Length: 223
Image (cartoon, rainbow, N blue to C red; front, side, top):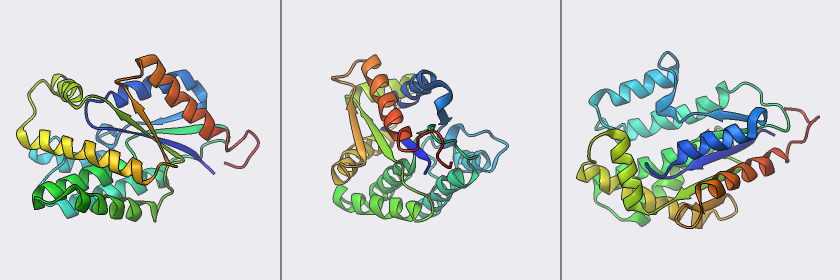
């Protein structure tokens, strides 16, 4: 019965920033979850992420993509299992959910294999299915999109260094896969294009999606 909204999008789309603004607007009705790489270092997710970051790769690539996929999928399930009960009428706002693991790991596998987006989409669907066999899919997935060049610039400014050719290719592939996933699951995805929405409009759309999800568990229902 938990209302759950996941925020998705490529690096640099402004997802975390807009999510923080939406969570602030929702106040006590929102249980906000940071993306896995920002997990507290002392906890299990933080320790696993730190191990994957051991090579210094910003996309958690250690040269063992299938193992990485299983670890990240397991962390998505752990996130669900470890969450304290969420009262009825509240909503979980998750910064990167199952779709992030599905999209980015499928992109990693596809880049390594030098194969097509069609093949990568099937991998993404399979990864997502594995995760949602053990935890529910989000009530709504909000996909933020923007001009890829603008996203790349934000990503590089935040990192303080230019993206490598392999990182640019991976991000481009991930962007395409997100659109393919959203087209495959139109009933689950809300796509917000920042090229046509102002920042305030994007935040309002996210908060409205959260309010709509929370309304499915009215006050007085069992958490």
